[in-house]
Image (cartoon, rainbow, N blue to C red):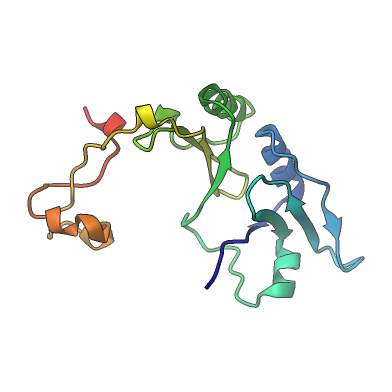
Length: 179
């Protein structure tokens, strides 16, 4: 049996990454170079209340532990999630990142899972989710439209929803996006 223990974020600019995550009030320690003189930088043990940790590695460091690194690969497939203490913190940190000139993604909204939620984008283009604690009284079933079998996004629809594809005409969209 496996358990989740860590996420390594490979970064192109360690200083910019440290500055960005500190802007989000994450307690990021100073990077260190290992082996000495190599240019390979690492930050380990970024504090978390969970039983896992996040680490940052620059490209030279990542090539020490993987030969499959593709720094020019495009596409976002993972959202790094940060838990914040309050719903207001989601809005405040989102605005703080935007005011600092960083790109932002999903504007803050009351998500169907009961949290206030937003996405900001780090210097390497990784999406960083800002999530407040879940309020069970704010949970709802989102309205959505499923892709039809002729829609190219059909193959990417969640399996649990595929049975509904013939009854719903287009694509999944969060409730707050529906007009």
